[in-house]
Amino acid sequence: MASIQLEFNKALNKTLSNLLIFYVAIYVRLSKAEEGKSKEEQSRSITNQKSICFNYLNGLIESDNGIIKYVFVDYYIDDGFSGSNFDRPAFQKLKDDIQKKRINMVIIKDLSRLGREHIESDEYLEKWFPEHDTRCIAILDNIDTFSESANNEIAPILNWANERHNKETSKKIKKTFRDNINAGLYMGSEAPYGLIKGNTKETKHQLTVDEEVRSIIIDIFDKAKQEWSLNKIAEYLTNKNIPIPSIHKKSNRGIKTKTFELWDPNTVKDILTNEMYIGNMVQGKTTRLSLKSKKVTYIPKEDWIVVENTHEAIIDRDTFYIVQDILKKNSHKQENSKDYLLKGLLICKECGHTLSIQQNKNAKQSYTVCNYYKKYSKYDVCTSHRFNYRVVEKSVLNSIKEECKKYVDSTNFEKLLKDKEKSKNKINETKLLIKKSTNTIEKYKKQINITYMDKLNNKIDDDTFQSVQYNLKSKINDEQLIINELEETLKIIENKVYDEPNYKKIVEKYLSFETPERTSLLQIIDKIEVSQDGSLDIYYKIKTPYK
Image 1 (cartoon, rainbow, N blue to C red):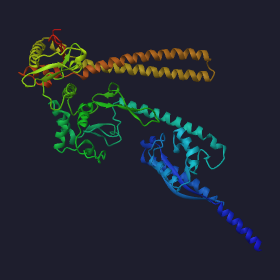
Image 2: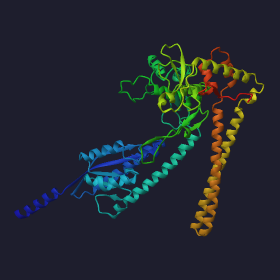
Image 3: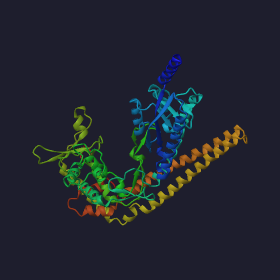
Image 4: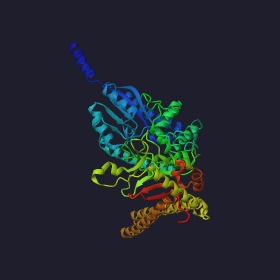
């Protein structure tokens, strides 16, 4: 009897020593694409995943054979995070708990919940989890890294398929996103300073003016129009205790920095150069290198998507473009430099560089000098172009006044002004032609697909398919060339409409001053070329009537 008891105790001790305990985590992820669904739909998705996983775990617990024990620890839920990267808060917490030995088993509904990037998903299944003695089960895909099942061999294929699905979904989302931007709908997460996004489903892509900020933006543009520097405007706003944009939006960005509440000159510049304040929707400024990359790249300004008159303007167009000219002309102006009427307008005819204006040591006389010559005089690259500034200014102003008088007195004045209405009609016509060609291309592409299906179904032979495909692709290329030409034409027409202030009023205002305002001058003059012999060539932004 004693020997039987001894054998039983040995068997019991062996069973207890081989007892395997799994500390189980259930990981749930709601995909980013599902964020647009209703809260009820999102809730069902989360609840559904949890239910499938927990029911599966209960099945394991009920089949307890005394050798393996399952202990549920917690749910880990990433709500609204893309599967294309693994930098998700709940997943990172799960990894941390695995490394701390709190978890050694993870249950997911299927592999797509783990991620939709096949290389990293394979890395976790085949390397990271095994190296950390962690079992992973994907229920619907019948994957269990604890077993030697042949199903595990197809996990890389499933991960690849999940990534392909993610790419196709991303393409569809990007196309919809791009179409909405082209339609003038605001697709940003936050509205620019001074504007507010609608708070209903119907208005969430529309912008209205933030009345709390309207007067501040107008004030900023007024100061810039008076040629206040960016630093001076920033200091003025700070001294008036006007909240910076991030504080106004109740954002905590930069809150730990010592300069958090101070206006920055770059913020002022961003406001002054933003076409959103004249009612234009400006989007498509950045992009990502690929679906897998987080790196954001900036798109050249000429490729931004601009849709006119989508919301109420805070600043009139004339003021906006005057300020753009001032910013451009004063881009190299030093903070404490003396203001000259022609500063930034004088160009060396010989080398094309700017002429600066300097004072003699006795400060009684100013003169011009070629900046290129000044910097590289020992290399004999240009000449000094040293002339008495006051003489140059007087000559320029007299010449401009004579031109302006002829401009205003011309009987052909109205005909010589750009016909804005005709330009806008031409824009609409061109856009319609572009749309027509785009639709034609889509029709040809569908015909190629239909022909391809006919070939697969043996309705036509391969030679016929190749011939039809070649002809249709040629037609697509022809339509694309038409679109390219129309888009170039559209850019030219739109640029003309954009820069169309009322020149007659500008010229009359200029003539009303004995010494003209610099802002009026900048609206009329593009540049003044000064030759080494002292002769002047004045380039106007308007066409003189008699030419």
